[in-house]
Length: 135
Image (cartoon, rainbow, N blue to C red; front, side, top):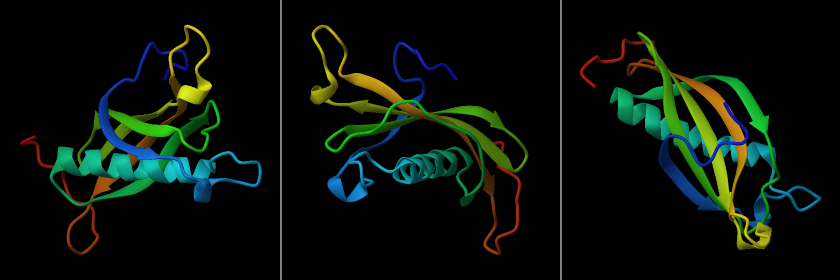
């Protein structure tokens, strides 16, 4: 994953607003809140791809690049890294849009976090099951 990407990679999955209730004592948004939003987005994307119930089994890598501030519009983008027999690995990126971050001539969009999440397809009993190849 590249920190200085020209823009978001992948499909827009989720947008939300960073709120004061999601901050730490210094006023920055908790990293755990960002991770939660990424997991929600990845869950949505993996279920759409596999047309199956999916569960998170791993966060393979996670990099926090910049803090997220109250009032930032938080957007999570995702792309497929790998589809296996029972699992899907996604590359997820979080970008924010904030007029408050903008300086003359700079883009108000900023990549703040990137991660690789792995999800596994499960049946109604919670057991691994193959992902349909009819995608």
